[in-house]
Image (cartoon, rainbow, N blue to C red; front, side, top):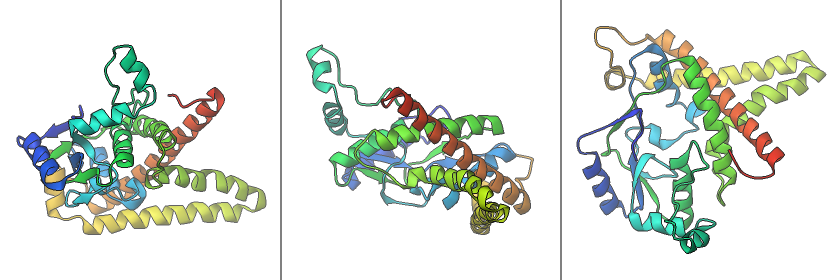
Length: 275
């Protein structure tokens, strides 16, 4: 798989094949190495490294290695994909009609890679492997509006991914829990006392702010060199990174949570899992 916003290394395919052979996994991929050509992209690159921004997804860490729940993009064993296709609902009807196996869930507009890795993990004990030798760069959205739309759609897709399969990944739904905590619980608190609502929002801000600050302390010149791609212009300074990072993390969680909630209501009204 290749993303329109990605750029793979010259040895990408070779590295994927080697990882499949050496790991014994049926799905392999590398880390999502963010590249920035603007401050917004730099803030995003920092935000996704935080626990509150990505829920601790290992594929956001270029040094991580091992078996995980999902990876960025991915390379798959054909036999495993065929097995996944055969286990899909309606596979027998498609075969009888002379149609090919439907491996990817086309009803999932987003999160298709996570969804298929989720189904592979249900069939294989050691399904998905993250290799630091697989090098692929990712150029994120460059405006706030694009980020808002992206994470709202991510939230909608996450709901379908979470409830469209037998397994349920808690980590991927952290933004929804955060949205409920930051948004709905203070509304209840307003009925019992404004100070409780203010306390919830303050604690939420301190958690995000501390998480972003912790990540900034870990950022070094190597990270800046690998991430910042705009020659002749210096990357954002530490204070800019903190302010921008906190804003992006909060925006990611709020709009991801909004998308998740919107999709839950949409499915409830329609009575079936659908986009």
